[in-house]
Amino acid sequence: MDREEGKAAQSLPNLGATLANSGDDDSAWCAVTEFLGQVPLLQCLPGSSIRRIAEAVQVKHYESGDYVAREGEPVDGLCIILDGQAEVSAPGNTEEANRPDYVLNKYDYFGYGTNSSVHQVNVTAVTKLTCFVLPSQYGHLLQTKTIWNAEEAAENHSLLEQILHLEKLEVDIFRGFTLPEAPTFNQVFGGQLIGQALAAASKTVDCLKLAHSLHAIFLIAGDNNMPIIYQVKRERDGTNFATRKVEAKQKGLVIFTLIVSFQKEELGFEHQAAIMPAVPPPEQLLNMEEIRERRLTDPRFPMQYRNLAAKKKFVPWPIEMRFCQDSGSQHKPSLYYWFKPRGKLSDDPALHRCAVAYASDLLYSGVSLNPHREKGLKTYSLSLDHSMWFHKPVKADDWLLYVIDSPSAHGGRGFVTGRMFNRQGELVVSLTQEALIRRAKTPGQTPKPKL
Image (cartoon, rainbow, N blue to C red; front, top):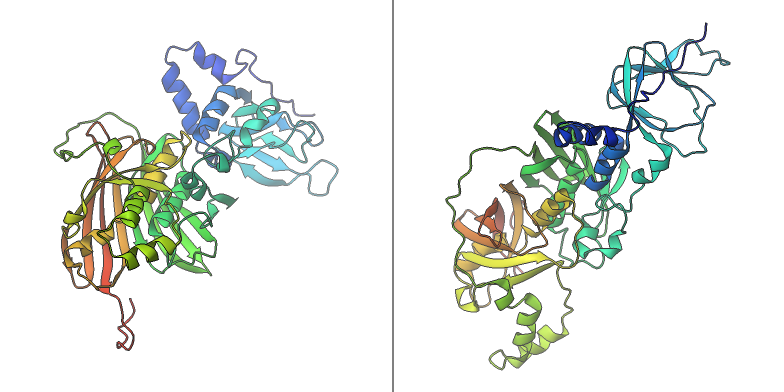
């Protein structure tokens, strides 16, 4: 006797409408959003897309033995298993018809296609089964322009957002690039590695969990002319926390690792002992381009210096910076500046944390060299490790004050701490970094052991 097909619960036309009539709309809708965020297919979507999908999905229930999908019948949408098990088996006219190919469990999905698609296999409920179904007319929600924005292409946003856009190769594997429009350094900029690796990790957790701490180790200098492969390992997924490890690779070698912890927002104890320094607002300060222009026309600088500086190609950084201190304080082991990305950022909260992570490595370790600067001294520095703690929600496209101090340098290593405040004086991020700092080699100098 043929198995009967499961019927959709007619009283639940879609989950969004059901939640609208429930007594606890927000918590129920958040629960659906959080669940959908655990589905690997959806995790690379912008958070806004997942929230829209949560409003559009329908609920279907099946009894054990019911057909969920029949081979040859039209696909009516993306089906995601909420509870129970289903088995996938070959069509009845094949030799393998009686043997299940594999079992589908919670978070697994099938039926990902268009209105013209038909099922290629049979899917049968093994137990009582509950599924979320995204009808085919909402299939466009699964096709987004970037991992950060559903409607707008990356080129319509800031250069920084373009840098932080990754290409998904497969589940938990992404590819990033050093864009030609971005400033070039001798090796891949450390902030780029931190920001892109955090982006990769963020696209493997549900959108209600945001990074609250990260710890990075720089292993090998990266090549600007090669793509970077980011491989994410899911170390832990809990109710409130998730942990990811990311390895960045070039030429098959791991050049950088990142451990990042994510947390779902919750209420708790609060205090803040840190006080934002009294500094002028950013509107009263000069940015890097304005400082450069003044130096090129300042007669106090030697003409030779001004001519060389004018001939040197100048590429603005993706981050606008406005310095709070004058040149007279350049020998102090501290630096204060306001910063924000140039141009428009999408509103994904995870993107804003990635943007701050990118900016956090700009001029950071160099502060440990400030007390040692002297005329003719040439130095180089290389980040060794980098840690960040996000204390509060952060909007990267509003001005943030970066307060950097270097309490110690010893043994060829400089140590720096950082604090980031928003314009309201709230401490939003704390940071530490240790970097290799050395005198640059001069011609004929005996080579020193490599790091």
